Image (tube, rainbow, N blue to C red; front, side):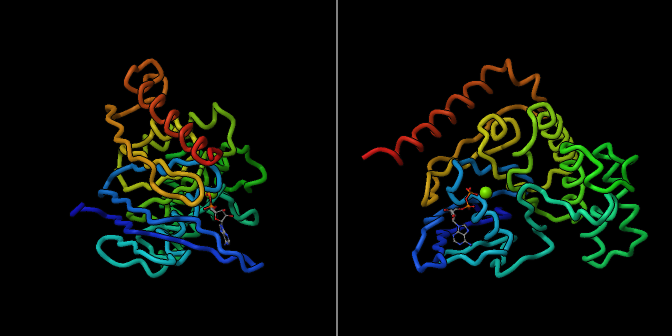
Length: 262
Ligand SMILES: Nc1ncnc2c1ncn2[C@@H]1O[C@H](COP(=O)(O)OP(=O)(O)O)[C@@H](O)[C@H]1O
Ligand SMILES: [Mg+2]
């Protein structure tokens, strides 16, 4: 794709474990993401999703192949991609607002501007009143919202999200998915979103990349042609939405069978 903001070409990652064994985590993966696109990476646990995201983030070096971001070869982390937080852990010794301010201050913003910026983001995730609380004083769902605000605070061109809603109860997950889409539909950043949830992938994405089990390869790429703005309750009865979910469930089922087959 000529106008790809992320171009993953023939990417392979082979880990050497401490006892000297080689483990092929990612094998010849090709993915192109257009600017402003919301792309999910869907696959079973251990298939290399986090590894793939860390390589795009520049935190893990590929064994072969390459990643281009805005036409430039990725050789390390950069402000255009923001950090990757699996499970979205917060700094427990910092208050909510300090957690959100952390990135911009690191990037050179004055504390005063960073505070204003963080306040706006906390407003967006409906946590303004909790700015001076510590993470341990919040519910799990509230902590996730702080984490989303913190990720957005970096103002990267590309958001890398690693199963951000994995550890939540179903209701909180739905609320946050809606909130993420609201924010995304407003400023249309490019998002690379890792998940193992089929319905989450369909609900959020423009495109879903389905991965095989280890070594992670691209099994299929499915365009999700559903109108936006999307709201979960509206989609549940939508025939097209259901068909996408079924199609992806079948693909994931195939992925599992392939591994256990002869
Ligand atoms: N630093 C590492 N050293 C060795 N093996 C690793 C390392 N990081 C990940 N792996 C292995 O790579 C595979 C893919 O891991 P991961 O990317 O975390 O999968 P996923 O996020 O899809 O669950 C796993 O088998 C994991 O054990
Ligand atoms: Mg992972």
